[in-house]
Image (cartoon, rainbow, N blue to C red; front, side, top):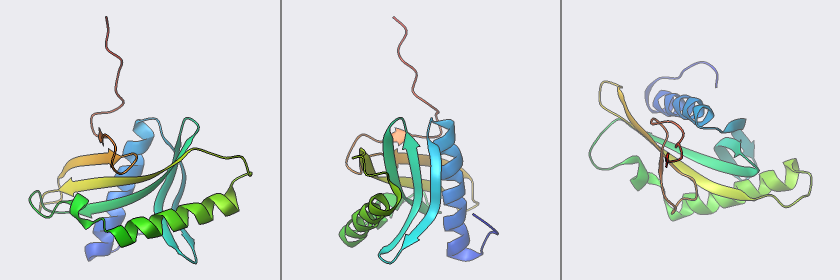
Length: 140
């Protein structure tokens, strides 16, 4: 994720960098960033255990509405799936892998102070707070 850009593009790059760092602290291994094909691009591809995650990162510099979650449209979801299938068809060994379309919401205040990085590993599934670190099992 090379040189930082200004404005909206710079904000997006910062969100992707912060997300990549948070993912690695939470047990993910980064495979690719900004992977492109004729159908579009995926921001981050990561692995946790045996599962692959195709991650769209949305960063907003507002703590009110609209939230980063509001920016994920049905059209974007369709494109994410098409790009993920293109990656799987071109980059994997042929073995069927478990994969997930995932979303990360990065929220900052107007000064750029980070407030949250929320991972939705299966889009509609239970969110994970990536700033809190890996979840530890309860001690009996």
